[in-house]
Image (cartoon, rainbow, N blue to C red):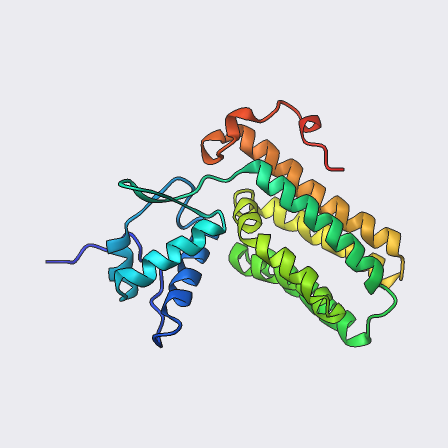
Length: 249
C-alpha cells in the first residue's frame, strides 16, 4: 500500500541537529513556511504531523511555535491549538513606515561613502534580479531582493538599523508574498534601478525619493489586495475604500 504524502512535505528536516539548535532549526523551518505562504494565514498547525515530518519531539515544536507567536506569525489558543495568524494590515503599514524612515536616512548617510566593490555588488544583484524575473522564479527573486537592501546595510555597518528592520521582516515578507506576480517583479526591478541610479549619481534626494516611492508602491498594491481578499487579514473588514485611508507620511 502506498503511504500518503505528508501535508507538511514542504518542511525539510534538518540534516544535522544538535541538542542546542533543534528549536532554532524548527523555528526557521516553520517561519519560512509561513512567510512563503506554504502555511497560509488562518491554517491550523498540527504539531504531531510537524514532529513526524521534521523527525523531532514535541518540545522543540512547541518552543518554536511560542517564538513565532512573539513574532506575530502564530496564534496559540488553549484547547484549540495553534494557527497561522492572519496578516494585520495595520501592523504591516506601521512596519513599512518604520522601514521607509530608516532606509531613507541610511541612504542619506551612505551616499558618497561607498566603495567600488559595493557598486559592483549592486550591479551584479540587479542582473540576478532580472534573471530570476525572466525565469519566473519568485522564491529566488525574493532572496535577491532582500540581498539588494542588505548590501547597502552591510556596507554602512549600521547593525542596529539592520536589526530593527530584520525584526519586522517576517511579517513584511509574508505580506509581500501575497502580491507576488510577474508584473510586480518587473516593477520592483525598475524601482530598485531607480534607487541604484540615485546612488550612482551621488544624489541623496533622488535615491531617497526612489526608496520611498518603492515602499509606497508596495503598500498601495497590498491595500488593494487586502480589500479583495479580506479573509486573509485580521483587520480586512475594517479597510477603507480608498488609499486616502492609509496615508504614508
